[in-house]
Image 1 (cartoon, one colour):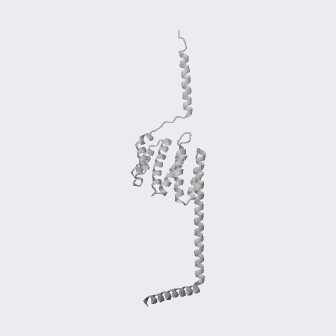
Image 2: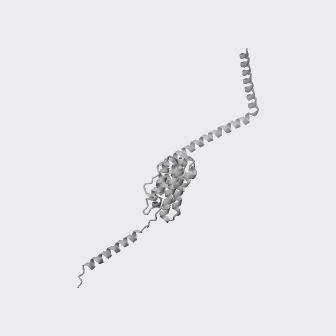
Image 3: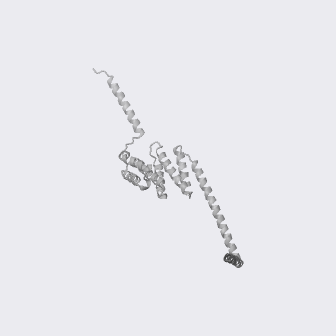
Length: 237
């Protein structure tokens, strides 16, 4: 009997809910219909937005894979394109990959010019690794790459202007990488230790002689040799 009573009560509750919903829709049908339409429109717009963002992200990845860095000029164009793609992307995974690639290629291309390092490429690398460090502070790959990359940027800058301040900046960056708990056990710490051990050699001033001066010196040595040979062949009384 009790079970039948409970069943009867449940049926009554369900009927009450259905009657209440019917009455509410009758009185507020217009507003409810509008609300449903707004929900459907919002869901549709969100779906379209997600698909559009996904398509844009896929296009960015495809475009990045087609970039060429085989020589200095193509490298400049590709880095400029990659900078634009990065600025336009809201996909963190793409931005991370793009910044890692851009920094690596910029440092490599900086050494490919006739009289390395190239200042423009070095500045690109500095900007890239600074952005990488700021945008992904919790990513060990980003932080380690940025610290080692920025230390290399300082070494290149030293070659360009021989300012000893670059050595201190590089030392601070490498020390941070060496002592970072976030980088514990990763190759970045070993690289930092090796670079710190060679710091004095890396930041040793190098005198660069222009090719014209070398040619003039060579010609002068040749003329002098001819004069000496001529003198040696003259008989003295």
